[in-house]
Length: 134
Image 1 (tube, one colour):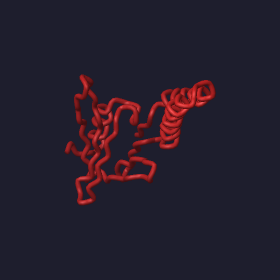
Image 2: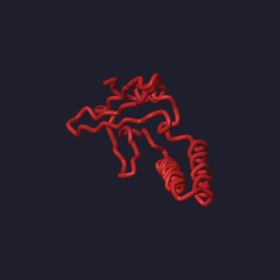
Image 3: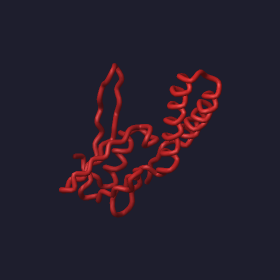
Image 4: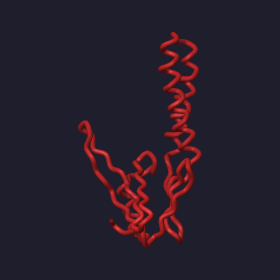
């Protein structure tokens, strides 16, 4: 099993980033800084989403989460997966928390956009595959 950001969202961010980069040619100097910053941000996020595929992958050893600094693998017996729900500014968001139950103290927090799927669905799949509830 594996989960990754949706390709369509990453491509949309990249196209929007390129459009903003081109728009910097049409605005005043202050606008260039603001629009250019938005373009860099969107292009960076799109590149990260396209490079870090799949973001979460399972195999016989456990769960591997890919990050820009490398991969983190948590073995099945030590894996604790749970869904955390929080409310901010009237919006309810869910995140998937993957924690290493050993002394390594690894905590990975992933949202819906990074997984490409609902965190609760991913947590259920991980529990069925052998993760603890934490």
